[in-house]
Length: 37
Image (tube, rainbow, N blue to C red; front, top):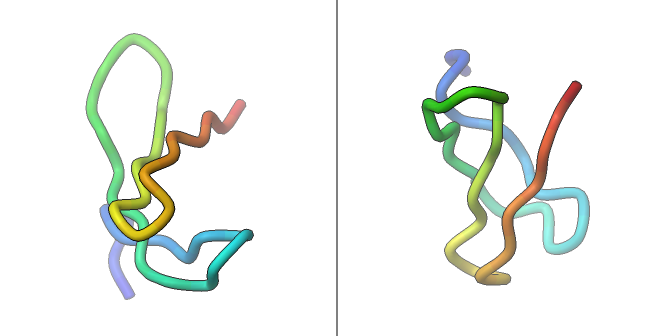
C-alpha cells in the first residue's frame, strides 16, 4: 500500500490522499474528509 491510499476508519474502505496545506484524506464511500496531523 502506498502513501496516497489509506483505509477509512469508518467504513474501512479506501481513502485517497489529497495534496494541500495540510494532509487530508477523502473517502468516496462515506463522502467524508479526514485530516491528519
